Amino acid sequence: MVEKTILVEKKKEMKEEIVDKKLLEKASQKLEEKRDEKVIVLKVEEKVEEKKQINKEISIEELPGVGAATAEKLREAGFDSMLSIAVASPGELTEIAGLTEATARKIINTARHKMDMGFVSGNELLEKRRNIGKISTSSKAFDALLMGGIETNGITEVYGEFGSSKTQIGHQLAVNAQLPKEQGGVEGMVCYIDSEGTARPERIKSMAESLKLDPIKILNNIKFIRAFNSDHQMLIINKIEDLIKNEKLPIKLVVVDSLMSHFRSEYVGRGTLSDRQQKLNKHMHDLLKLAETYNLAVYLTNQVMANPAIFFGDPTTPVGGNIVAHASSVRIYVRKGKKGTRVARVIDAPHIPDSECAFRITEEGIRDIE
Ligand code: GTP
Ligand code: MG
Image (cartoon, rainbow, N blue to C red; front, side):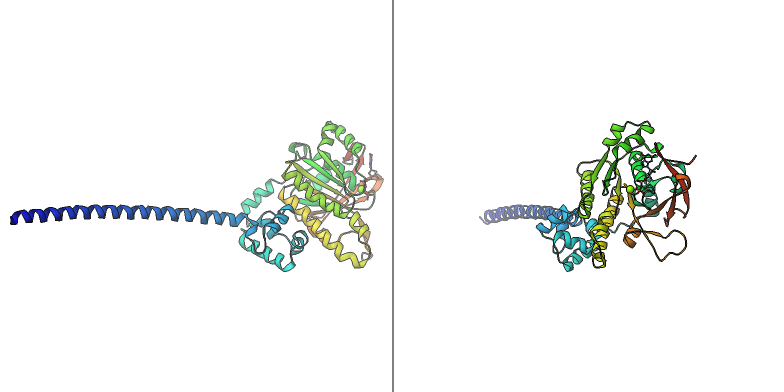
């Protein structure tokens, strides 16, 4: 009897033990599941955080004071990345997105703070320099003066008095930019901004024919546009970016002939000078950005004014002041020489010693003096 009770007790204990064991197993399984769940949750959280981090790098909405509407306006104006905002001036953002100057400053500072400022190693810079193309002028002497031709990735400005050949050089470059590299070109299309109404397709045609090129093809690859006033001229630069970015046109040369004619005639008198310089600053900034972003060449022509401060030598100075001087990578002064020749002189270029050469303008285009 006693034995039976003990047996029953034991069985009960064993049963309880089994139940306990099962419970324990179940509990630990649950714990394991929970732990897995937690790991998954953590992993998901990590991924979300990662995504947020990536978004932080690319989304301009993350900047203080930039809501959906402002972001839209900024994007429309081409400020679609941290970099473009970081390098903008408060004035540009104020004008374009209707921000107060204080907000614009804050946005720019935050963008600068957040982004990788783009330090590059010497080797990377060398690589970038290797990708720079040179467009021949069709005169060996002129090309030699320019160490190969006019460069992409920067602005080349040619200034001189009327008839000195600024427009003719522009026409020649518009043809030559389309040539393959071995022949002095960059195999690109051209955008020709004509603010004086002096662009001549028939001149392009004869220049192309003299190089045994198909004039129809050459003219087809040059997009001519007449700029009617300075605002229009500035707007065209944004349009060019559109053509490159959205319509994928391989534009490698932008000619602006001439840079200052509208600015000069629209802003007359001392009181308007600072307004003019402010706009001109944006224009030059846009051109430089275009040149550097798309590795294209910008060729500007500029007028001269008499400089009464110079008593000896040539008393002519390019118009536009320091703003134009600073943005131009290479400045060339052209003047009429003996017997109908032209003389080009390089003025303060970082990689070219100050020196000059002579060339001539023929029926075929720009050529060497025989
Ligand atoms: P502005 O725009 O007036 O300031 O002058 P610019 O520096 O642009 O002068 P441009 O390039 O128009 O050069 C004019 C010179 O080029 C003329 O004096 C002509 O000698 C020469 N030229 C222009 N077209 C032709 C042409 O079809 N054949 C030849 N042989 N020469 C030309
Ligand atoms: Mg001209």
